[in-house]
Length: 334
Image (cartoon, rainbow, N blue to C red):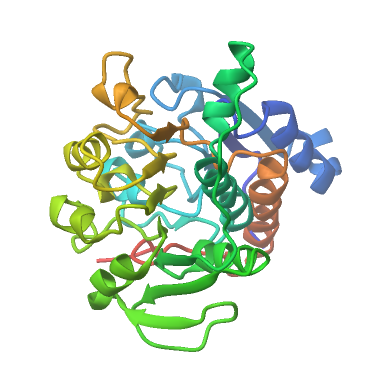
């Protein structure tokens, strides 16, 4: 049992990850007596860059963004990021080595997979053009494409990639993909090693990026790889903007190397949310669907991530091992 009284819990949110009330309610429902007696104190913030001094005695953080004053929190016990990926904490988190970082592997898999199939349908069925016609009151017929029988290439068959494969099979697509090793994965017709990514790109009618940013994947979609794609193929990225060389993407679209693309990522340049400014030329690029990095933000987000958060609070209080410590962020790491 852990004897910290009161236990100070800081929840740092950003628009889309749920409301403060949702997370606060989950904690109160799990620990009603402790909250009522003041043994657990809940603090809420919507700005990780502006944590007030009175919150520096925090013991536990659950956050959807970088919390910049973590090094000043001398009583901090652990942090949970409300995301599956944690590369942003690796770059900018400044987490002391005795503090473990938790995440939720696959926590975004279902919503991102649904969103990815939605983007594929958008591109194939020309929804954007149809919506433009509706706004302009033009009753014009546009011929779309079918997903049936097409080849889907998934670059990265982790939790998200596997959920995408599962849903693609409902459309009778041929599914191929890459991973660190060859294995049998449900709904995947043929596997390739990560080093064979070019072969997947060449075969695919839809190329989906579903891999983390690593030294090997950083800028992987460059001019050479866009030229490997079929001229009638589409690229979908719901992973990281840094996987794509943006100038190469714009050139590939404007010059007709590929049929189209959809992007639900940010080209992150700092620890704070990095939005695509109005003057960015990507907005004016032909045949692209741009969404604001929201594929995982659904009505289930707070329940899914908040549920694991309160479970780990309970485990911490009982002195039990915490769930889903991020690799490389164990307590006492060197």
